[in-house]
Image 1 (cartoon, rainbow, N blue to C red):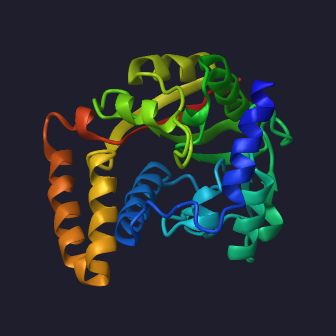
Image 2 (image 1 turned 60 degrees about the vertical axis):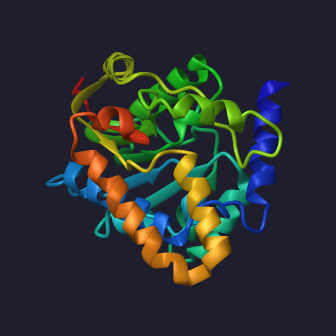
Image 3 (image 1 turned 180 degrees about the vertical axis):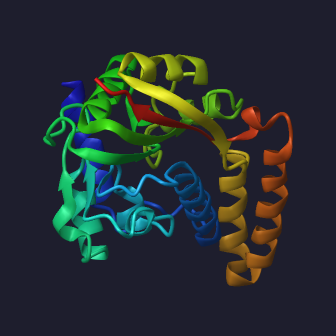
Length: 264
């Protein structure tokens, strides 16, 4: 059964000692800073009390974790992941958040409709192989938000020409994890509107050339160790300049959307 195979893949990934070996610490720090800046810009004035993040891989294994800092004044901070192994690792690494971290299928979440003020979904829905699963998950996120609640969503950017070979490679044996379906921004906005969400803003973030930059940073780290950090910093700065160009839609790793739940 396909669903069972997918579940086993994520459970096995979460049980590894270092599943995020490919992410250089400086790149993880860049990813964290960019996501936190995006979330803070798009939640200004919201003051959410009940917050959910849909993916716990960063909290479990990476230097790019953000959940503890997205809403410091929230009364309830929740996190969910499809894999129990990842949720458990995230709880062990973040004991202050542990009671709010659960293993749950995002297509059929156990949270009540309208119970959340803010949902942060960072590159989660783009791991599903089919559009049907993607749309089902998007509707589930919309149902959990209260009227006026906000969704900050990031997905793999299919406008990036390196996305397609990367997706193909992740379907091969030995890949760290699979990359799945991600719609073009226009289709994504229509899907959000059909789910009852009003799209208010969009952005394209992180302009490191996918696959190429990962291989380069891993090679620098293995060859030079920490003495290669200045070179990594210089490359990250150079890649970030791509985000200032009119072509930024094509160089971004991720597309991001801010959407608000419409009043009934």
